[in-house]
Image (cartoon, rainbow, N blue to C red; front, side, top):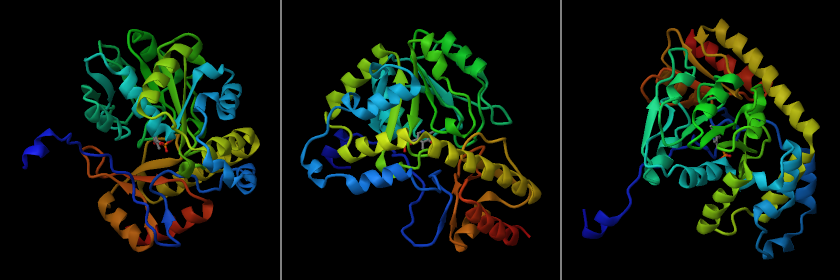
Length: 352
Ligand SMILES: *Cc1c(COP(=O)(O)O)cnc(C)c1O
């Protein structure tokens, strides 16, 4: 190693699912929505003045998007923080709230970005093993700690923690910040948002990437007490003052306005998920009941790694991790009914 390299920050980055450039593939590997964004978003794109790009954007919390989200969740604009996807929101929240010097807690099997942020920001952490059936045991999060974060529903398992258990964790941890990452809450879960009235140390994080079909726009947000949000903004504006691009801020507004469309596509995905569960079962797969737009499944006989590679030969991409406890599982995003039909045609041949 050269001398200068000794003074370089060395981290192992997060690896997202592949984004193959090949046309015509069936992409069930990164939990994107298989349907387009709201038609209002399409209309807005066509009307948008390209001249607007000349100007810097406004601070996100001063925009119409913040106003729309505040109205949507019946909170004030001071209780909304907007970032470049929820990854940005979560990253800023780690940097802002997890400074106790004590280990923060999260599940052993969860969103694999959490340990990356902890490492890059030098935050000590401790993971808590999920139960055999992949559920979170709330008792694990009641001991002294530097903060708590978990997704609900959890990823990549899809399991849901009931609101009473979420409250148990928040109530027991009022000396630290508790972050609930609700990336998948719109697919049938019960949100922790109502708890915000009681707990000023709770931060609920949401994204437009999954249920609102706008992963490419990079819009995420957090809802929390005005105090929590102001601390978050102070850190955010110490890193980058123009955080969100103007087009995304404008398009996000249209997506929030079209609640009917939003509910319709979530309903369609939930219906396809139910059908997918039945068919996976009939093929010999087992999985925890999913509350996300994906299913985390293992086959009784055929190894997940083999199925994962074979599916690629059919141009079907799912997600697989070579990681302890979950190496025999595949995370399969719920696509359209037609995409799931193609998946089952392939699975039937691979498994027989
Ligand atoms: C997808 C995902 C995110 C990040 O989504 P963004 O596209 O950055 O908004 C955050 N948390 C979990 C659990 C996710 O699955």
